[in-house]
Image 1 (cartoon, rainbow, N blue to C red):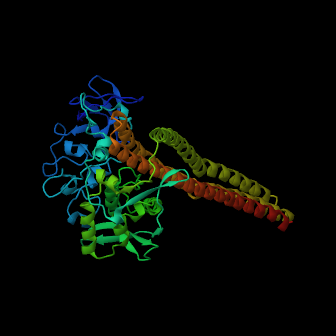
Image 2 (cartoon, rainbow, N blue to C red; image 1 turned 180 degrees about the vertical axis):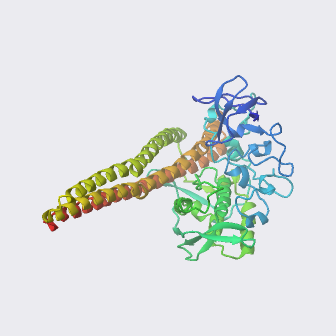
Image 3 (cartoon, rainbow, N blue to C red; image 1 turned 135 degrees about the horizontal axis):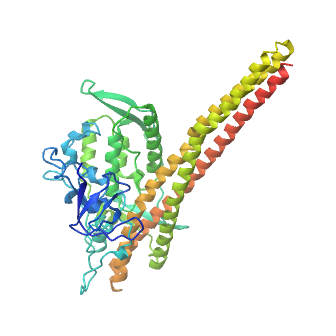
Length: 539
């Protein structure tokens, strides 16, 4: 098997242990095509092995296989037109117009239309956004404006998140769009700093157990979820790929809002009970976060997703409208109204640095908690269960030995000892089943929040890029300061929302965990009390 090679699209300088530097046009060897949060592992031409951003390279496939779909590279091959999307799963394949016909196909169809680079008749978004790494470097380490430039310069790294998100274009006054009153997003000054204005009409949305549907006379199967929002009380049916499409639109529309990651796709075993249950739980978490976000919950595309019923024509009209939305990237910032008093730049920078440190520590410690509780759950399901059952079986063996004495007055004791053994075996089963109730939900929550934490490096990068530009420019550029203030207000409002939601979610989840634990040990105690009672009953 020939080694997988990739061509470097632009320079990357390693800054952390485990990373390697790569140079434009250099050829690197990939150890695996599997991405980890937007990073690939491989070896550069100098023989150094480590990680580098997936979006900085183009996989070379010609020397491996010529079996392309209609002459087009497979979806994993990052051509230059794909490179700007930089996310393995988010904007790379779904943040583009596409035809209406693919809406009726199953999400896992490997149709050429999905993988093809954008050509005539489809319009890539103006400022594609990545929803994952690599943009975790400070913009201060990017190249700044050209020497000798009298005005604010452009960021020469056209692949930086600051550029791709539209942050730079907005800051330089190049954004232009008509903003209707209904599209305005207000940031207000709360007790703890800028906040998104609360949604005056909050709602929630339930998701039923999915049902298996078929089409093409049973040749194709898919799962359909029933969604019922409380503000309409009308159920609509959606498939996973509908959620996927919505996610792509939201990532493109809101550069400094953390759109929660969807539960992962799965090509095989999609109809197995455990997977269906896990995905539904993931979608419930996702929907809970969406409906409780003051901005995401009331945006047009999300409301269309929730409200449009079985009328296919109306659905496609709304879909087309969303895909032609002009208020994406740089134009998103035009929709934001800020408090009358501008923020202090130094204070903003301090808050952002503090949040960066927080997210890094939360991410590291989330991994520790997840690893620990998963190991504990495994021990309960195997070790604890086995040990309790061994004790139970040994008590039963003792009872069998006692039965050999054939004394009538010992029959009650023998039965009680045997039932004590059964109690221990049952307790072993309790331990095996319990993690589903109290440990798995914590693990699910941590996974959801690790998705949020993966979004924030890019969000912070946009804000840091704006701050850097303002520092580099003369004081009289008043409009530049105003536009930087808009980006800062939006970023801090999103951080504030993240913290409020985090406190809500972890408080509820830890309460649930402890209540479940208390109930669990009460159930064990009740079973032991019952076993104890047998010794009184049979004297």
